[in-house]
Every structure is written in structure tokens, then in C-alpha cells.
Length: 117
Length: 110
Image 1 (cartoon, chains in turn brown, yellow):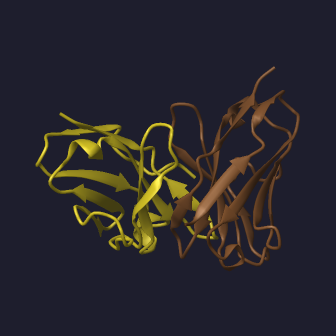
Image 2 (cartoon, one colour; image 1 turned 90 degrees about the vertical axis):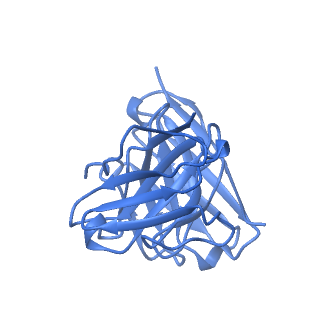
Image 3 (cartoon, chains in turn red, brown; image 1 turned 120 degrees about the horizontal axis):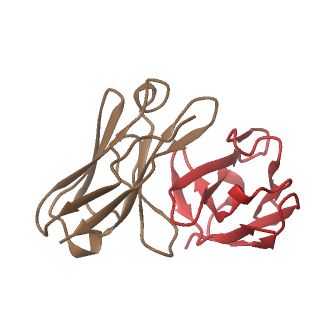
């Protein structure tokens, strides 16, 4: 059974950093690209970043480019999102999701990040 | 990059069909056969319903179908059921390995 479990969310002040993790199980993690998608409270989904299965391809949404870093550890079946220079508008539930061709076929339950002074 | 355009809400009665539209541009929806659709219940992560504009993953009810014409993709739910009440999101590949989501549509079943 494919499963993705995010962690690392919490309350952080503007300008500070936070690192999210997503542990995968039930499938071959190293075979798939992985995405981060976020959802501000009461709002829609926003794609954040994708990393290829071998970590050679990494792409970001303009809204987080230069501040967020996606990475993965294929030995530990874990996806990461390092978030620096956090802003109030980064407040959201952050989901990790497994990628296929251009669809995201399995999603975690999300972890809430609140940026507030 | 602006979000794809979806109606904020759609309402239907049990047994009726409904269609949710998703409008983009020739740089995303119209430029690739790579639109996907997701269903999300409150407090849960999204679930994949349709991929590649029209394809259905195994295990998804065949009451859900996808189509596309030009820069507008559509999700149709036939034989509406109470359990279909949820939020629905489209997503399109937008080139250079980036992706765009729609703003989401809240489906209410009367």
C-alpha cells in the first residue's frame, strides 16, 4: 500500500527557516519523481516544486524560487523541502505527492506551516 | 503564471450529470495532452481522478470522465451521488517541468 507521511510543519516567524520531510513506503521511491504542493487555508492547490527520481532535475514555482530547496534521499525513501526566508503568504498545508508522467497519483495528508510573528 | 480558471462552485441533483470546466492557454492546457483532475474532501489529501486529459486510473469510478477542446478541459461526473460532494481541481503541465493548478470547484449535491 503506497503511503506518504509528511512532517516538520509548525509555527515560525517571518524570515526564519523550516525543513519539511516526507517518508515514502509501499513503492519504489527511487523510481518516481516527487512533488511538493501547498494549500493556503481555505484556498486552492498551488504546485511548489518537483525533483526527478535521480535528483538531477529540479524545478520550482516562481513564488518560491531562490527561497525553497527540494531534495531527496533515495536510501532513506525520504523527500525534503528546505524553506528559507519564510513569508506570511507561505502559510499553508504542504503536501508531498508521487509523480508519474505529468500526474500526481498518491498524496500524503499534509503538514501545516504557519508563518506568523 | 496565473492559475487555471475553474468555476468556484457547481450544484447538481443526484442522478444528474455535471461538468466542471478548466480554462488555460495554449502554453498549458492547450499545448499538451497532460491535464489531470483531483478530488479533495475536507481535511484530506487530493485523489487522482483523470490524467492525460481523458485517462482513468484503475480503481476510479467510470462515472468520472475527462475531455478537452482547445484551451479548455472538462471533468464530467455522470449519475451524481451524494458522496461526490467535494472540491475538484484541474492541473496542467505548463512547460519547463512546471505545473499549474486551477482555483478549484466546490461541488454541492442537493
